[in-house]
Image (cartoon, rainbow, N blue to C red; front, side, top):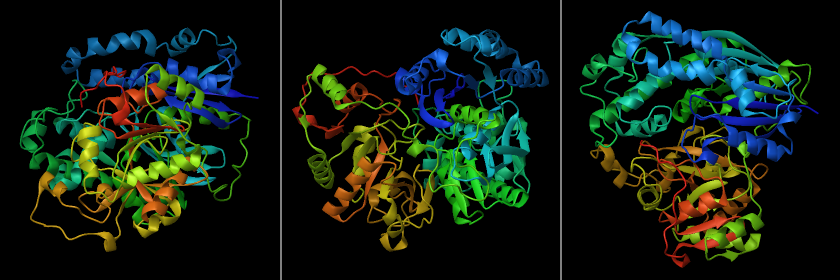
Length: 609
């Protein structure tokens, strides 16, 4: 029996993953335990969970694998500083201390953090994009596929195209730092006042409110894109090589003003800038996908890296029919590197995981198990937590629980829903979710402003029974991880006043499922399957029986600045401090109005967005 621990840490979204004989046993992000959003610290708590869930100790591990090669990355950082000296002197002293302590001697750091490791346990390293590629292909249902990874930067690579065959990955092409699509998108994220490595999805959500007025300016001044999707950034508009800001005054002049501060209002200019970089990103991703098909000859595509979380671009690739099938790593960002690093080492050894022989897809499902890889809590543990909070609750059997919950949702109640194992990755997929009625024109504003405490422009996703998705959306592919955007069926769309612009477009229902229809008539879809999530599937079936509608609004169970809840304690505190109507946790139902009036302290560290 073989146990391998994968680790990602020190940049953002640190995480851990445990493999047992090549099977993913557990995976979780550190933020869910520390309650610090996008926590970059060594994932001690996540590792402890993985080992406890696997019922092993540190000295049972056969290998520990880190998702980066720190010496190679350090070389890149030094070379980059030397290339722009003396401009980097201001940031150099602030960056070096962490490298000269825990990062550069990472083997020593890991052994200090895991003192129970056997002295014979090897500590190994993969390249950053190798980890991304492995998390995409080796966890997919395919035995042969093209692999596309796109992010900010690893050691040197920012974009790679690879070929996956059986247990092997061959890296065919790469683009290198500083020429990075991820860093380009992050530059615009920061310019529009959102936090990099956390706010890119906000920029994507803002884009449909604007017009692509700056596309030509981006192509003329910022980026030279070739027909194969390769590109070159004009660094005279960017400052990330030598400063803690992404852009400079030349960038500001090009787009008509200084970067937006987080507390400043969003203007039409910000919306147009967001739309423009989104259009450019989609075009580059399409060219990269076409080139990947051309040089690999494969019918399947696997994707990872932070840019693979751009579900609008993913939807464009899907609708172009470049590939027969596409699979996206649900934890496509750095957290998923922990999974990829562990899988890369397992498959590079003489061990052979079952079911990866060559010759097409080996199964209809992937190895990520619906991304439900985190902690779960028994009814006894839930009841103990609720009792400690002096909460008022009912305990119901499954049939009554699903019926009552479906009935409340049909009455436009907002419900926190905590069931089974926590999701791995940035999306809540029905186990740590806040739910609502997609037919309600009120639910989006209620959930954004009174529950999530977030920007009103942000869209919500529909979770829909997998066999009924095609009734509502132009989607011909399963989307279990909420990573494809597709158009709502034209037959469901409503007439709108085209003269209305900007955020005022929110005031108009755009379809008969207005709570999950973005202003451009699209939706970020999750298809729900009985096999991977039976309880959430059962609730959707009950709601469909009650209302005729086989979907629900599904958003992550958290508020702005907070990680998604993990434990019953996290869930109760978040429920109590918002205006959610009900909490369903395990088989327990809580009504807001019946709870004690004494405030409950939050357990998270808010992050300024």
